[in-house]
Image 1 (cartoon, rainbow, N blue to C red):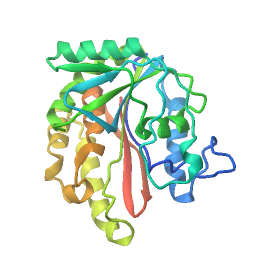
Image 2 (cartoon, one colour; image 1 turned 30 degrees about the vertical axis):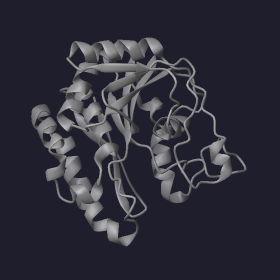
Image 3 (cartoon, one colour; image 1 turned 90 degrees about the vertical axis):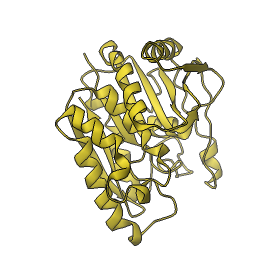
Image 4 (cartoon, rainbow, N blue to C red; image 1 turned 180 degrees about the vertical axis):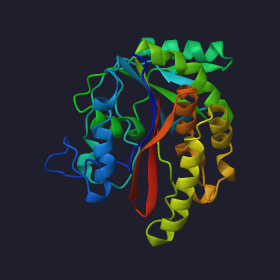
Length: 269
């Protein structure tokens, strides 16, 4: 069956695994619990279990789109200042090198220069949300980078190029945060982040697929856009998920408040 695509919030650092007494079981501060519960229910809500996952994270950028072809990627602990046990987490899912190369071929066919590499570890935009969604680490996963120029229209076009994978049992996931401004937290963030979130959601869920893509590509014209994203790397995975979603209906499947931020997740199809 055709898989949907998702843009998921991946939280803040290892936020779902802060209990040192049982670090492999998700146990987060109550503030993060709705997001944790959303991620934990992800696979059960699919039409069928995917054969593999293709994930683009806001924490990997290259000059060209690049796929990870490793068979057993290590973890890249690219967060800072958290308790020692959070640097001992494990998520031992297999890589999906065949899927990675298939994705690279689709991107090249669409005119995008595309690289391959096998040494980089999975960053926390991969293993933190996936450790919640797939605690048994039993679905192969391939990661794809953002392109460093962060061009929204090209990331949407890249998603469109990857869309055939959905008919091959592949779940395409964009992992980021719909609001990501680490300099503002608490009450000062509430009103502008909420206004931004509702404007973004209106654009993402536009029933006209062409208008949807146009509006989301012009994200920086929405209210409080640069307050929400001083730099937009955490938003660009949404562009890939939206492009891969094609003409399918778009819905807001999650909304919660963390650190004074309103944060949403979206499903296409």
